[in-house]
Image (tube, helix red, strand yellow):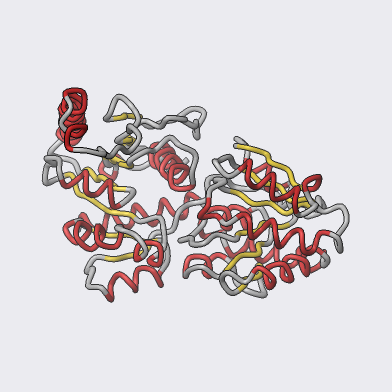
Length: 390
């Protein structure tokens, strides 16, 4: 544990919309909060909304947890008529929502106001919507703000996030993105304070995975953007040539029934395992010999970083600069042109049949992601705080 001198300890707030659901960005926030706290900082992880299905990331957290709203967000609703929109029940609900929003903002302002004036505080907004929220709340001048974005520039451009970042992040002390190519894209759009901060690995694997389990793994929510249908198609295309191999899905989500049915139609239902949410992912990676990623879009996916840290080579679509920084084609894994399911199947089958290549890639992958270990990333954060302080 790296304890800080008292004059270097800071009060840190990590702010997210929903910080307790299962997801890569949520895991990063908890990992950072625990790491900062263990270094001696006073840390508070703040979720704007509680999760409808909370997940526990840290068994014994050293940081404070606060949730601003008292209930999860209600399902989106749209009136079919003016009468429905002006109904007493709807008007009462809208007033209650406004009161709850004001209560949440007041609570957040009070948290910031508790930062001593003779010290320095930082609030890290973990998403564009968190930055929007931050802008609506009174904040003392000595509590400085940093914005993060956990996805790629490509993802931002395809959503409202690009507009939100360009509108709200310039007023912050720093805007942080996961890869240099992404930060460069935002600079080209005249975001003056764009920088790079990678996400830390949530665990350190003491020994590499043995790579003898004949299992391909996919890690993440079972939702449409992950395009796990393409992974099933690719696995089914090469499974007959590689008896004994299985495909394991780690995560839950709304697409599980559809994916189960698709696996049965493809004739590989008996070789596909749905593992659900797994608490010990470090142990799960040790079961695998390959990790596959077939998403529609990704920024810098934690599954690729975590697999590499465990010494498991990856096959991934070439989705972003962040993916290319994590997987070095031909050295730590294989990158496939985006969307080419047949090419993905060929790459997957090649590594399924080549044990020496898997071992070579796995060793190189562990070395490649070593700078993402939590102590190294915390050092980068503390250097950034000192730079801003100056």
